[in-house]
Image (cartoon, rainbow over all chains, first blue to last red; front, side, top):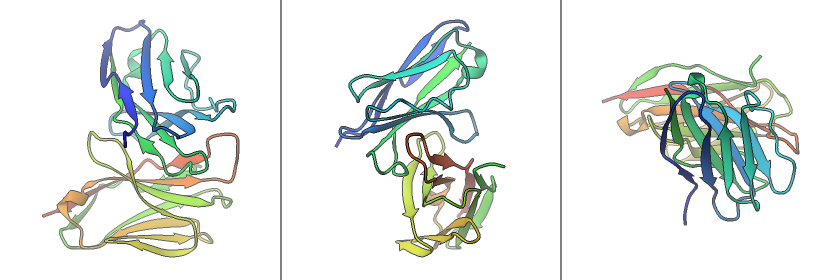
Amino acid sequence: GAGVSQSPSNKVTEKGKDVELRCDPISGHTALYWYRQSLGQGLEFLIYFQGNSAPDKSGLPSDRFSAERTGGSVSTLTIQRTQQEDSAVYLCASSLGGRVGEQYFGPGTRLTVT
Amino acid sequence: QKEVEQNSGPLSVPEGAIASLNCTYSDRGSQSFFWYRQYSGKSPELIMFIYSNGDKEDGRFTAQLNKASQYVSLLIRDSQPSDSATYLCAVSRAQTGANNLFFGTGTRLTVIP
Protein backbone atom coordinates (compact mmCIF):
# COMPACT_ATOMS: atom_id res chain seq x y z
CA GLY A 1 0.00 0.00 0.00
CA ALA A 2 0.92 3.66 -0.12
CA GLY A 3 3.50 4.83 2.34
CA VAL A 4 3.92 8.19 4.03
CA SER A 5 4.17 10.98 1.50
CA GLN A 6 5.58 14.46 1.97
CA SER A 7 5.60 17.53 -0.16
CA PRO A 8 7.46 19.35 -1.43
CA SER A 9 10.56 17.17 -1.62
CA ASN A 10 12.75 20.26 -1.77
CA LYS A 11 12.07 23.83 -0.76
CA VAL A 12 14.37 26.80 -1.11
CA THR A 13 13.17 29.97 0.53
CA GLU A 14 14.53 33.34 1.47
CA LYS A 15 15.18 34.24 5.06
CA GLY A 16 12.09 35.78 6.63
CA LYS A 17 9.57 34.00 4.43
CA ASP A 18 6.97 31.54 5.72
CA VAL A 19 6.91 27.93 4.53
CA GLU A 20 4.40 25.11 4.75
CA LEU A 21 5.40 21.46 4.65
CA ARG A 22 2.82 18.75 4.10
CA CYS A 23 2.61 15.18 5.33
CA ASP A 24 0.12 12.54 4.26
CA PRO A 25 0.36 9.55 6.63
CA ILE A 26 -0.43 5.92 5.96
CA SER A 27 -4.17 5.39 5.92
CA GLY A 28 -5.40 4.17 9.29
CA HIS A 29 -2.38 5.39 11.23
CA THR A 30 -3.63 7.52 14.07
CA ALA A 31 -0.22 8.71 15.28
CA LEU A 32 1.81 11.25 13.33
CA TYR A 33 5.21 12.71 14.13
CA TRP A 34 7.36 15.49 12.78
CA TYR A 35 11.13 15.40 13.14
CA ARG A 36 13.96 17.58 11.94
CA GLN A 37 17.35 16.27 10.90
CA SER A 38 20.24 18.56 10.20
CA LEU A 39 23.17 17.37 8.10
CA GLY A 40 24.98 14.55 9.88
CA GLN A 41 22.83 14.91 12.99
CA GLY A 42 20.29 12.73 14.73
CA LEU A 43 16.53 13.07 14.67
CA GLU A 44 15.13 16.02 16.56
CA PHE A 45 11.54 15.45 17.68
CA LEU A 46 9.23 18.37 16.92
CA ILE A 47 5.59 17.44 17.47
CA TYR A 48 3.35 14.39 17.92
CA PHE A 49 -0.33 13.94 17.10
CA GLN A 50 -2.33 10.99 18.40
CA GLY A 51 -5.93 10.70 17.32
CA ASN A 52 -8.07 13.51 18.70
CA SER A 53 -5.82 14.16 21.67
CA ALA A 54 -4.05 17.46 22.16
CA PRO A 55 -0.73 17.31 20.32
CA ASP A 56 2.57 17.04 22.15
CA LYS A 57 4.34 20.22 21.05
CA SER A 58 7.24 19.88 23.47
CA GLY A 59 9.82 19.58 20.71
CA LEU A 60 8.98 22.71 18.76
CA PRO A 61 12.12 24.92 18.92
CA SER A 62 10.36 28.27 18.88
CA ASP A 63 6.98 29.90 18.46
CA ARG A 64 7.76 30.35 14.77
CA PHE A 65 6.97 26.66 14.37
CA SER A 66 3.44 25.32 14.39
CA ALA A 67 1.64 22.29 13.06
CA GLU A 68 -1.87 21.13 12.57
CA ARG A 69 -3.51 17.91 11.59
CA THR A 70 -6.84 18.12 9.84
CA GLY A 71 -9.41 15.37 10.09
CA GLY A 72 -6.96 13.07 11.79
CA SER A 73 -5.04 12.62 8.56
CA VAL A 74 -2.97 15.16 6.65
CA SER A 75 -0.65 17.36 8.65
CA THR A 76 0.97 20.68 7.82
CA LEU A 77 4.08 22.02 9.53
CA THR A 78 4.41 25.78 9.22
CA ILE A 79 7.58 27.74 9.84
CA GLN A 80 7.13 31.50 10.00
CA ARG A 81 9.85 34.04 9.36
CA THR A 82 12.35 31.37 8.41
CA GLN A 83 15.94 31.63 9.57
CA GLN A 84 19.05 30.03 8.11
CA GLU A 85 19.30 27.69 11.10
CA ASP A 86 15.93 26.23 10.05
CA SER A 87 17.66 24.61 7.07
CA ALA A 88 17.32 20.85 7.53
CA VAL A 89 15.43 17.82 6.33
CA TYR A 90 11.97 17.69 7.86
CA LEU A 91 10.72 14.14 8.29
CA CYS A 92 7.21 12.99 8.96
CA ALA A 93 6.36 9.56 10.33
CA SER A 94 3.17 7.73 11.19
CA SER A 95 2.28 4.67 13.20
CA LEU A 96 -0.68 2.72 14.45
CA GLY A 97 -1.83 4.31 17.68
CA GLY A 98 -0.55 1.66 20.03
CA ARG A 99 2.74 1.06 18.26
CA VAL A 100 4.66 4.26 18.72
CA GLY A 101 8.00 2.56 18.12
CA GLU A 102 6.99 1.12 14.77
CA GLN A 103 7.10 4.30 12.79
CA TYR A 104 7.03 4.58 9.05
CA PHE A 105 8.87 7.59 7.71
CA GLY A 106 8.19 9.68 4.66
CA PRO A 107 10.94 10.72 2.24
CA GLY A 108 11.34 14.09 3.91
CA THR A 109 11.35 17.69 2.77
CA ARG A 110 14.75 19.30 2.38
CA LEU A 111 14.40 22.94 3.41
CA THR A 112 17.10 25.42 2.50
CA VAL A 113 16.85 28.97 3.80
CA THR A 114 19.05 31.42 1.92
CA GLN B 1 21.86 12.93 30.65
CA LYS B 2 20.49 11.95 27.27
CA GLU B 3 17.56 9.57 27.13
CA VAL B 4 19.33 7.31 24.66
CA GLU B 5 23.05 7.20 24.00
CA GLN B 6 24.96 5.62 21.17
CA ASN B 7 28.58 5.72 20.09
CA SER B 8 28.50 7.88 16.96
CA GLY B 9 31.24 5.87 15.32
CA PRO B 10 32.16 5.47 12.60
CA LEU B 11 32.37 1.74 13.13
CA SER B 12 34.24 -0.06 10.39
CA VAL B 13 34.16 -3.82 9.95
CA PRO B 14 35.38 -6.04 7.12
CA GLU B 15 32.88 -7.84 4.95
CA GLY B 16 31.76 -11.09 6.55
CA ALA B 17 32.54 -9.98 10.10
CA ILE B 18 30.09 -9.39 12.93
CA ALA B 19 29.15 -5.77 13.54
CA SER B 20 28.12 -4.93 17.10
CA LEU B 21 26.16 -1.76 17.77
CA ASN B 22 25.37 -0.67 21.29
CA CYS B 23 22.89 1.63 22.94
CA THR B 24 22.21 2.63 26.53
CA TYR B 25 19.14 4.33 27.94
CA SER B 26 18.45 6.29 31.07
CA ASP B 27 14.86 5.46 32.05
CA ARG B 28 14.45 2.14 33.84
CA GLY B 29 10.75 2.27 33.02
CA SER B 30 11.44 1.93 29.31
CA GLN B 31 9.44 -0.84 27.80
CA SER B 32 10.15 -1.25 24.10
CA PHE B 33 13.31 -0.99 22.07
CA PHE B 34 13.79 -0.47 18.38
CA TRP B 35 16.56 -0.36 15.79
CA TYR B 36 16.20 1.77 12.69
CA ARG B 37 18.55 1.81 9.72
CA GLN B 38 19.13 5.01 7.77
CA TYR B 39 21.02 4.98 4.51
CA SER B 40 22.74 8.19 3.52
CA GLY B 41 20.22 10.63 2.11
CA LYS B 42 17.28 8.38 2.94
CA SER B 43 14.72 8.15 5.70
CA PRO B 44 14.98 5.80 8.68
CA GLU B 45 13.39 2.37 8.37
CA LEU B 46 12.54 0.00 11.20
CA ILE B 47 14.56 -3.22 11.11
CA MET B 48 14.19 -4.77 14.58
CA PHE B 49 12.27 -4.40 17.79
CA ILE B 50 12.59 -6.18 21.12
CA TYR B 51 10.43 -6.05 24.21
CA SER B 52 11.82 -8.75 26.53
CA ASN B 53 15.21 -9.44 28.03
CA GLY B 54 17.39 -11.73 25.98
CA ASP B 55 18.03 -12.16 22.29
CA LYS B 56 15.78 -11.85 19.30
CA GLU B 57 17.02 -13.07 15.95
CA ASP B 58 15.81 -12.13 12.49
CA GLY B 59 17.98 -13.37 9.67
CA ARG B 60 21.44 -11.90 10.01
CA PHE B 61 20.27 -9.48 12.71
CA THR B 62 20.10 -10.17 16.44
CA ALA B 63 18.81 -7.68 18.96
CA GLN B 64 19.89 -8.12 22.55
CA LEU B 65 18.24 -6.51 25.54
CA ASN B 66 19.48 -6.30 29.12
CA LYS B 67 17.07 -4.22 31.19
CA ALA B 68 19.10 -4.59 34.39
CA SER B 69 22.07 -2.93 32.71
CA GLN B 70 19.88 -0.65 30.60
CA TYR B 71 21.46 -1.50 27.30
CA VAL B 72 20.31 -2.84 24.01
CA SER B 73 22.52 -3.98 21.18
CA LEU B 74 22.26 -5.00 17.56
CA LEU B 75 24.49 -7.65 16.06
CA ILE B 76 24.81 -7.99 12.32
CA ARG B 77 26.35 -11.29 11.26
CA ASP B 78 28.12 -11.81 7.94
CA SER B 79 28.20 -8.04 7.40
CA GLN B 80 27.74 -6.90 3.82
CA PRO B 81 28.69 -3.61 2.17
CA SER B 82 24.95 -3.02 1.77
CA ASP B 83 24.71 -2.88 5.58
CA SER B 84 26.72 0.35 5.54
CA ALA B 85 24.36 2.90 7.06
CA THR B 86 23.61 4.77 10.25
CA TYR B 87 21.80 2.70 12.85
CA LEU B 88 19.45 4.51 15.20
CA CYS B 89 18.43 3.08 18.54
CA ALA B 90 15.00 4.13 19.83
CA VAL B 91 13.44 3.53 23.22
CA SER B 92 9.81 3.80 24.25
CA ARG B 93 9.04 4.92 27.76
CA ALA B 94 5.97 4.10 29.79
CA GLN B 95 4.09 7.35 29.44
CA THR B 96 0.84 8.14 27.72
CA GLY B 97 -0.61 11.23 26.15
CA ALA B 98 2.69 12.50 24.85
CA ASN B 99 5.47 11.36 22.59
CA ASN B 100 7.30 8.61 24.37
CA LEU B 101 9.77 7.41 21.76
CA PHE B 102 13.30 8.68 22.08
CA PHE B 103 15.97 8.25 19.44
CA GLY B 104 19.72 8.08 19.88
CA THR B 105 21.92 10.05 17.54
CA GLY B 106 22.93 6.93 15.64
CA THR B 107 26.06 4.90 14.93
CA ARG B 108 27.52 5.04 11.46
CA LEU B 109 28.58 1.61 10.22
CA THR B 110 30.89 1.04 7.28
CA VAL B 111 31.40 -2.48 5.96
CA ILE B 112 34.62 -2.68 4.01
CA PRO B 113 34.59 -5.05 1.00
